[in-house]
Structure formats: C-alpha cells, structure tokens
Image 1 (cartoon, one colour):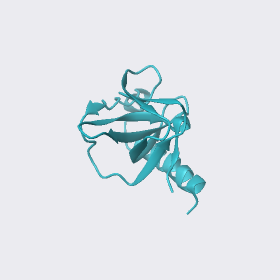
Image 2 (image 1 turned 120 degrees about the horizontal axis):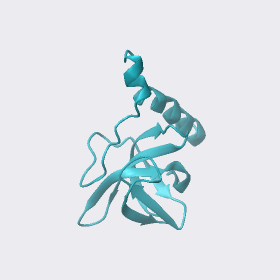
Image 3 (image 1 turned 120 degrees about the vertical axis):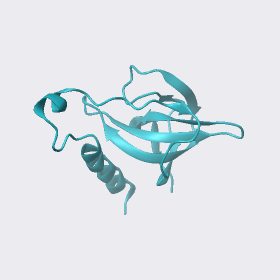
Length: 118
C-alpha cells in the first residue's frame, strides 16, 4: 500500500474516531475533549513510524496549534505513530511517541511536520 493511500486511510479512520455516532444533538455540538500529552509511553500499540521532515517539529498536548508544546523534535527524529485525527478546522494531526535513551513523550504532531518511514 502506498504511503499516500495509508495517509488517506488514516484520515478517513480519523473521522470515525472523533465522530459522535448515536450521540444526542447537544453532545454532537460540543467539541471533543482533548487528550493530554504526557511524559511517558503512549497507551495502545504503535502501528508505524514517521520521521520529522522540518527543521523543528512540536509535540503538543492536543491536536490544535494553540495547545502547549511538550517536546521539540528535529529533522530526522523518528517517532512511533499511533493514530491520526482531523480537528474541527480540517487539520490532520498524528498521535506519536518520541523516545530518547532516558525518557518518552506522548502527544500530537501536525502531519505537515512528518512523513512515513520506509
């Protein structure tokens, strides 16, 4: 499967992840609660790896640019990929984990900052 198709599949699956199937109209109108980034391992199982392709990328506490930065990552850093979501503005974000020799950081990075590893 091509990298582009995999990305498109992730975005389509994201709509299901943050959808409000069976919810009342009032619940559908409220924005989803943002998951917090934490220092430590992400829950779940990583399904792929992505590399940072910009000079600096930012792992954030949520999938909006206005959320706090928990870790700055740099070109060439490798991140474990867990899932993708699309926020209310249509921007796609990946849940990722960055690990160095002593710590792990779990959070969200904008998809324009990374690309799939081969």
